[in-house]
Image 1 (tube, rainbow over the protein chains, first blue to last red):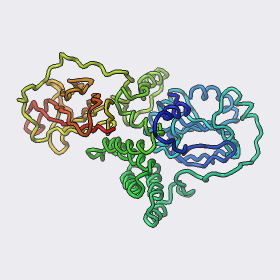
Image 2 (cartoon, chains in turn yellow, cyan):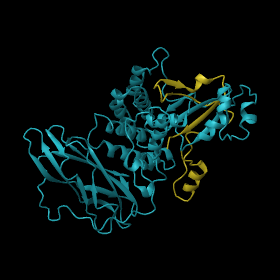
Image 3 (spheres, rainbow over the protein chains, first blue to last red):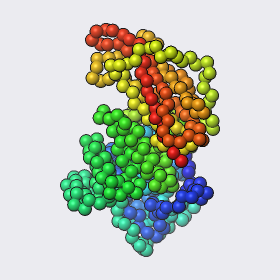
Image 4 (cartoon, rainbow over the protein chains, first blue to last red):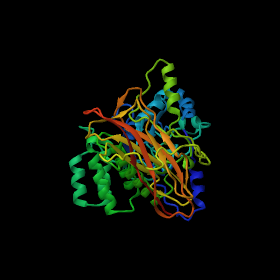
Length: 65
Length: 405
């Protein structure tokens, strides 16, 4: 897995004329994370973030590359 | 992820923490293989359309028992004291949108298709068509892919600045390209639509990576799937059967980045310098080309994918007892190519009908603009199943490369 930090991403575009767009995924500390439902990679069955209410969750978005 | 997997394993086992993964790639089975190899035993969800819209990965978020975000940048050092052992209250300061993406009905675990369709038709807004497309591509399976494609198409007609809809439209085209219902041009359409999305927002690295995955080595940040063979070997060594991949990564997907194109072999011999080999006038072999990215910037590189397959409507097969399929590339003046002559590996069986894929890379001159036709041709041996006649033929495959600033 490769690590592309958001700061590096931002830095790459500071030198261009492209105006920065708002980050569409910006979970803010102190706010509730929006719920979502996606298929499990092993079973294909739907799994929602809200199913884990009552437990502490570490949500990891990544890719196998 | 291995650091977090190992670093939190004890807390997961003790029931103090749930690791929940979301993979931002098109092929779920590749992530399944990684999880098998690395023994990731936590739930991992598949977001092939970038529904959650992170700009890049990895992203980690610590969420408490009440669903409230407590850290957007957790560190393993201090994770226990700052998050795991800490007592939080249900004190959310504000509630952003309750949900991202389609809702599923509790009784069927499926979206309410008819309501979504009716809403899209009635409102006829980009957002409603995109919502229908999201539900179809995530939960409708292959049979809904073309309807998802039509929904996203309507979304971008209504709002040409809807980057996510352009990106997801590209995902639909690529999915169809990998299916038995593939139509000519699907791969190029995928790349072109991803390109349109990225033009609207160049900060989206998930979108950028989807193009680079199939692009030239000069533009690759790293090899995307070079780990697959190692993973399969390691899994087999443990006595397990590795996850079977529906689309095996090859070519650009397993290539490694380079800083300069290799100099092509100057001794390569043009197989038909005088153009005397008979042309494939009956269309026994069909060619499809895809240029990645769809629009090349002056002085930059692209990868050209050439796929050749026997025409399914004709009784024809490759003659593997003769010389293998070759591809000759004639670069215009000032253009660089990675290879002049490419050769396809041949199966051991004498007669086969598989599609054959060859790729090469180009660097366009900094002065190039507009459309340039790159002369490419293939020579191959094929046989007629019915009459038994075998022929050596040439197929000219002009590749149009568009150079835009």
